[in-house]
Length: 333
Ligand SMILES: Nc1ncnc2c1ncn2[C@@H]1O[C@H](COP(=O)(O)OP(=O)(O)OP(=O)(O)O)[C@@H](O)[C@H]1O
Image (cartoon, rainbow, N blue to C red; front, side):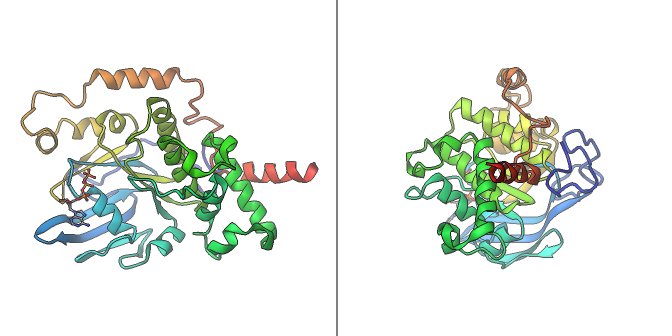
């Protein structure tokens, strides 16, 4: 699956690309072969608490990176800072080589770096489709009011609606597009928030605990969607507590504790790192994070799932071809 959305000009199969992610050793703050985000000396204090104190961090492009760490480690605060939802005490960072420290969250999204929230921010009193249109309002040239009032908008509006239709179908929310978002389950809201974030055709998707509070059936579907983002050429950074999820889908893991990066590397390696076990489990050193029975079960389940479209030709979440095909279909009616 490659080259469908203009994000993969070199036609690389991102699902099977095994080139090294880091340059040199897998150490905290290590340089990456191809970083999409580079952050330096980012600090954020709340009163006497140092919530974030990151000396150097690079997020690898076209990979799925998990940001893990115990409660209060600073993961959400780091997300807030990088995406312009909070202001640091110090620090600088770039996205695709552009300095975006101090840039508003709205502009950051328009540049192709989007995020979802731990507690979803879908608008309950708007329909599913209206929420999707709001996502498009983050695109250059779009206005929130225009996004909602389609009659004054013509062709562009049609294209946006078709894009939303394709996404809603992929996320299995198409039958709910006229329902109020408030009527969706917690898991469906997470799916909607993810689908909505894709309306800007982002390059980097940042998900804050996407699997939290989601039932097992939807968890599986969310995992597939996250993998599909990578198959489509996007980069994913997600916060997660559940090691099984991390082990299953992450190419790279960054571990935070007390505001700092304490380890980085591929999941299997990081989960055996004593610094990680210390940070995570405190006294329970006998637990092997890399060898839980649950991980094997989840893997078997995903392999057996016929609806799982990971890495297949059907994985075209935001492929322009799919949108064009729909427009043609419509015109032919
Ligand atoms: N707005 C705030 N005001 C004061 N303290 C805050 C604020 N936001 C975060 N903190 C503190 O900063 C630290 C880091 O919090 P943060 O929410 O970033 O951690 P986290 O790793 O995302 O935790 P969790 O996994 O529980 O979501 C914590 O000690 C938290 O209490």
